[in-house]
Length: 288
Image (cartoon, rainbow, N blue to C red; front, side, top):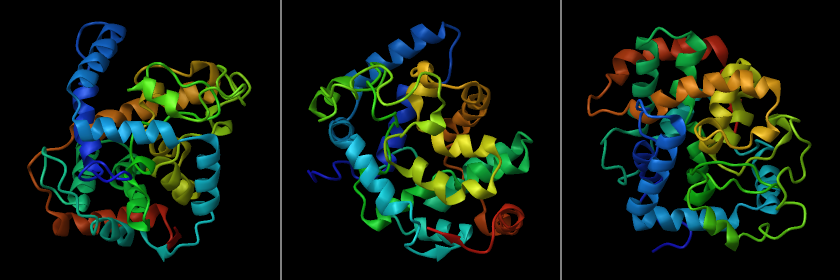
């Protein structure tokens, strides 16, 4: 097993998400969440479990600072959104048993589901681009530093995070400040003051934030922050703005988790619509 990339591909993590976070049922949110969490730990594939061990062990404050310094200068290359989608499409991923769609087809499928529900154009665009940060894999990053449930670093890890016990391997676990509830943050200072674990969400947020409304920025930055938007963890760090905008993260979540199907979108037919949509919000090239 590859110590850095234990899963067959990054979509293996995503294919397990609907099982761990099933569509809401009539029982209470608390009962549903706890039951889903127990079931996931019992049934998760060994490769996914190993992924979480690496993720929880190595996502430290110092690691996140290092990755922010390494990537957020955005000096690797210049390319447009559709070009970035085609670049992501070179990421061959045979790990997802639920779909044989290409990366572009999956992005278009999610966007089309949002479009069918007549959401605003910026919402449709967010569905189209939300996973583009996975190009970090093509820049040589290990999967545990690209995908996975995200969480704040620099404060105590919520017990609602899957495989919470693996955090005992993390050097920050016993830190006199990082192990406290608020850690290095002021209570209710807001998530914009919080360092999240490193991955595709945070990276894409910084690439695209200047061109999208705040609601879309939150969808991109926090769509993998399941402890926050599904388990209601870290409320002591949320500001009033976070509470207001997280309703949009929750609106986006079903399209991210449950829009996969075997029905292939006709990408070539739909491409003119999406190129026009991209041009409405983004310049010809972005810094990556």
